[in-house]
Amino acid sequence: MRFLLVNPFYPVSEGPSPPLGLAFLGAVLERAGIEVRVLDLVVYPYSKTILRSVLDDFQPQFVGSTAVTMSFHHAIQVIQDVKEIHPEVITVMGGPHVTFCAEETMTSFPELDVIVMGEGEDTIVQLVEAVDSGKSWELIKGIVYRNGSGLQRTAGNRPAVDVDTLPIPARHLLPLGRYRALNTAINMTTSRGCPFKCIFCVGRKMVGAKVRYRNTKLVVDEMEQLSKLGFLQINIADDLFTANKEHCIEICDEIINRNVKVKWSSFARVDTVSPEVLSKMKEAGCTAISFGIETGNAEILKTIRKGITLEQIREAVKMCNDSGIQPCGSFILGLPGETPETLKETIAFGASLKEMNLSYGFHLLAPFPGTRVREEADGYGLKILTNDWSEYHANRAIVETSTVDKDMLDNIAKEWDRNIEKWLGHIQKRIEAGEASEEEAFPLVNLERALLIYNLMMQDTLAQYGSWEQENAAAVSAEDALNMLVQRIPDSIKDPRERIFTTLQTLMEKENLRYRNRNGRIEWGWVDYL
Image (tube, rainbow, N blue to C red; front, side):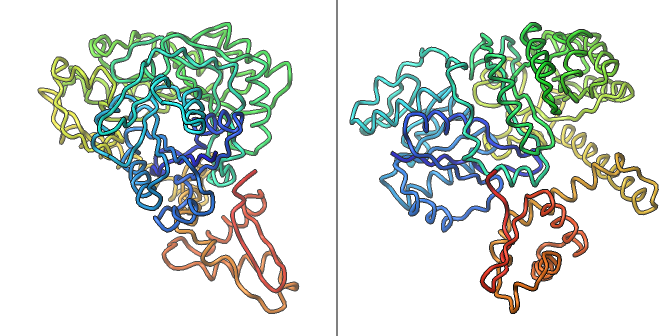
């Protein structure tokens, strides 16, 4: 049996990283003897022609896509295209979006054959084995599928996945080289589950309230492997890495004792950190911690069931600074109870925390399927403006409160964007004047570099222009061949040629770009797989 996994497109502005969930699915499928490929449309261009080529070459019996709400419309388009090209393929979708609107999705999109709800590792293997053996799907817990002319939802009370029985994610299936070229972080987990009840989040409902911890040795084994891949840093993507003090310190001690040299970051709550924990995390290589702060208004914090106080937020930021770890925070505007006055409070609170060295940003509330804030929107005084899932990117308003409308929220978001542009413009002027340090210049230089590389990837530039017949090819140096490549790149890549050359030269030096000179032909390409 063969299974094609799809990572649907989402914008580079969302901070791409190798798809960890698909790597877990790939690992359990391979362990069950199923052949797997991944089509990663975050770092590869997409067309129906490309999809047809992949399907004809691999000939999968299954095509499955994950999706968050924002990327659902891209995911379902691939599913529709699959059915048009090869109607016999069984199409599957999982992830938080379809988990909480399964029947609605299946009714709207007849091209989709089955939805896997919640954690999918055990279920997806059972599904493939049932098809292979001709058994009924009704005994597979936690799926919605087509049963004749109707839909069938099977029992959903399956046991939570034992995280220590999961194999190491099958990252060999992922184009890690492309992500590394973009200078992104690579994700891993040490636990699953979230015991908290924030009304805007589906984490608890998706993976359970009980936190399940992975074996410390296995965690650090994986971290040690990732540390050798050349990524900017590792991001521990647990819902809450600091949920359990003993687990957190035990992992840090294992990193320290084994002398694993790696930079990493994690997510935390402000009420789960302490000087002891932060000091240990810093010693083990932690460089940054991200907190969900959400609002500067104490009453809204209570309404959304965040369970923290403004003083705890200030204290956590101070403790991070004292330990030498960069504190990061995110705010959500448009929460229940939002008024013009509470917006001002949040903006002022963010500014005060910035003076304490907090790096932060604003998002606008997106009431995702499955969240309490969506299911009880009327009771919370919220008006949901659209069910166009492509608008659920949290950068523009899709909800209003009784006193805060869409324009008011959008204006704050747009002003935030303008301030970032001004900041980057200031850095540019200092670079041009020769006044910016390397550290100060890094945000702009890294952004420009990443956007250039991303455009080259998504326009398929190297595949189209990176190979040519060359007279006396054996006598052409790599530097000369790189100059030739730069001159062949079309004007649709608008960066200055000098920047293109230096960027590609750096990529070649870091082994993210491949150069071949053979049989009278010069060939350039990405190093996709590590």
